[in-house]
Image 1 (cartoon, rainbow, N blue to C red):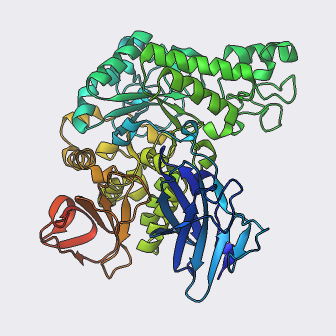
Image 2 (cartoon, helix red, strand yellow):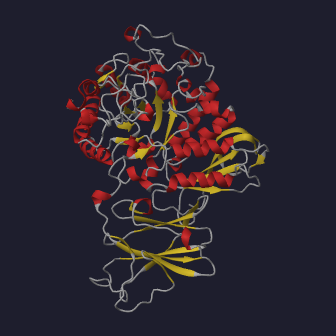
Image 3 (tube, rainbow, N blue to C red):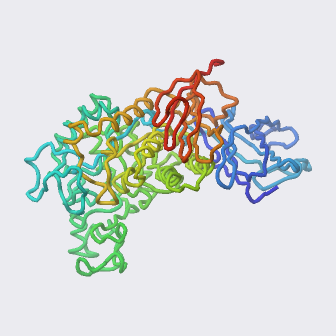
Length: 603
């Protein structure tokens, strides 16, 4: 038995309370393990000191398992009667059986009466420690808007240097302004409602001299080139009337060099009362444009001198930005905040945000920008979710790497959903492109592949987000080209009708079928082709560790993606086709997509 591949801990995504009754327990093993059993008990069932001889353990076979590239993750759900749990594992590789406890491996569990076995212990399922996420997020289809490039609704507030709206020409200059504003978003709410959108994610709208507003001057004022507080209130109010939630973008890792506290530091140095609001190492600073950040004079975002890094370890800074967020919630009635570069801020800062904002609005959605494993922020004391860039990369890389097999795709996706708790998986913020990435259609260069990936986006666990213009397959290279003007005249002329119809269809399916919003999925592969991806989604009513062989469900939605160069035959007899592209008379052609409903007659 390969003991070095076996791992478990009693924290994070390996052992956690799903709710007040259920505990999910997961163990990692190598591929040599053929079966795992979980033995669990109350720690005090054998008396106050937990006598080994009298303690009774229940066995639960760990049927649910998912494969990753280099391991298997086995999971089970138990319901401890008295809210505490002692447990251990029995592992079998076909030739050897070992017991796995907190202190390691045992060939047997027979010990002298004076010895104590060191079981894994989950001491108590405290309600305050359970990771609770907002229920509404799982049902939301998000639409990310970069305001300056979405729609110009009020030309009267445009700066004098605003350029003429370009459709759909490249955006070639970081500094160009095109006049998109909050009024423009309000004017297009009916369009978004017709598309099926139920959540708006706005990149920053607070006062800043840049078009992107990620270098904020005043966190308490709407940028005049975007509108007023009244405009923002009207946007949220009208969005709510249409059943849409609204999420603002909080940039609290860094500020603009024009942020008044920073200007005070530049002027007064250590004598400034704001000196410790930032991460300053040396003062005075060199002249502007002489690489202060690279020289270590002060820390900034990504060595950009114009974005000095805020000290989120400082209680004064924490208090200030908590109050900023409270003002946004109370003034505009927003439903969520996305935190830019959250993984560079302090955990103390994140904990304070959650504690204070959930008091004001318990179901506020707290989303962080993090491009990697973010378990440390997702224990239930900080964020509700993160932007699921690992899933984005896993999806896109499979299509770009023609040597990659369906199994590699399965492993990559499973990794993304094994990193976190089930409640987090429900609200992971899934996306395929954004203001920080190349546009999806530009990356792929193939509209049929684009539809395949959009099908994955809307049929995976989590919440789905499309970037403005994705519904028309808007092109764009890396920043700033990914921020082109929305081609409204072309949309109104009907040039993108067929593309948009497919996206609307996928959004509609996502909203209609609970199976596509659950966390229950399993990969299948009935095809003799290494580049065909297929998986099933289930409408199970529970988020316990899912075992399709043990659960009963009324609806199964199947997804098949032909990523090969050969046609594939698919038997859809007695099944209802929900969405298809390049599927004809039982044949799924190369780059084709098929989503169909299986009718489970036995259930």
